[in-house]
Length: 306
Ligand SMILES: N[C@@H](CCC(=O)N[C@@H](CS)C(=O)NCC(=O)O)C(=O)O
Image (cartoon, rainbow, N blue to C red; front, side, top):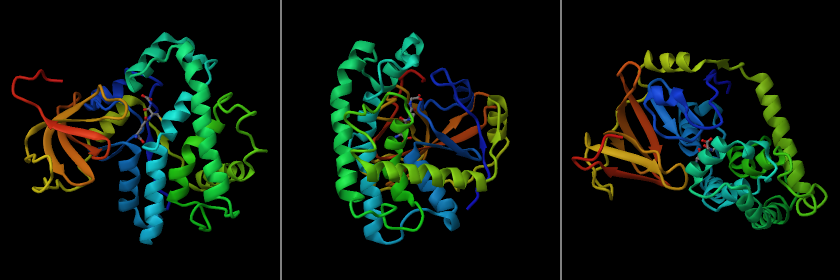
């Protein structure tokens, strides 16, 4: 499936004026918009892409394979692989000399990014990442399969599993060769390499994305319609929220200091949708968050507007 899209590249750290103009407080990237529906979090973005473009879907169709896909998603995100990967960044990384970057990442993670702390955390992080390489080499990929679910092409299960390792391999100095190397983990390295090549080939065949400046991207979103019908609030949801209530929602694993606020449009087991006003045209946008790792609560009367 060749989905046409436009991209708007964001600065490495806040402020992200384009997001401010859109009226989105969520601070992490990536974020996807389809019309005036704004989707935060890769988890939700992938789910929406799978649903909206079924002819190009990459996800498994068999329940047991779907379960493996989901477990891999949970392994890399909730199982700590991404956090450990980010703790393995080398203290020599040039961006760590920029105090604004350091402060920004402290806001994002809630932990110190002081170089001494980065250095101190790295050995333990590498120990965990090595454990993950062992799991892949001697478990998931041990029988010499090309792709995680023995598919002919990479599937969503490969994407869910590979991305932190793919990122680490591209980050100079992150993986200490005495601990993690091609020689020690040949199957994992070959899988990551195959994945990189498959992505390059797919990119060549895909339409070139249009790159928009911030103001153009905001304009593009604002002149569009919503891409989804409004949806409802599940009356049996444990939070007991009602449609139209003034609520806030935010991630609780990182970026937790940035809360989106709006009127509750829809609440399902997998997503919460808020209606918020854009700063640019005062038009309504709908901000979608997943439920997992997110908190949603009513804003009490008298609380300061965020
Ligand atoms: N669970 C979120 C995590 C997103 C996330 O942490 N993204 C990183 C970049 S890979 C980020 O936003 N870092 C801080 C920043 O760039 O502001 C997702 O999968 O989208």
